Length: 91
Image 1 (cartoon, rainbow, N blue to C red):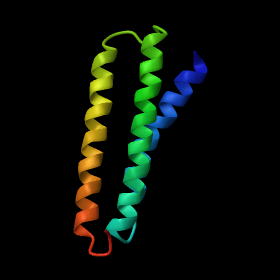
Image 2 (image 1 turned 30 degrees about the vertical axis):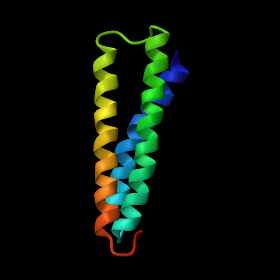
Image 3 (image 1 turned 45 degrees about the horizontal axis):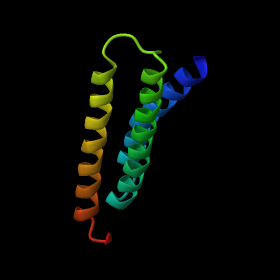
């Protein structure tokens, strides 16, 4: 399924792209905003992986891929919380 593959690749690439773009911003608040977008991309990636597993489009250990994207998303949540807490202008 080329469409699903393309969407999966885009959403996975978007995670790293948003982290990188956010890191170049001037404030922790802006960085946290990009981390929120990266979290959304991680959720989208998980959804695409889950669909690919259901459609038997992935060989190997798909559960390991799902665990890894969930682990990445959890780290992003923690990093975002830290950025929001350490920015005196937030909250």
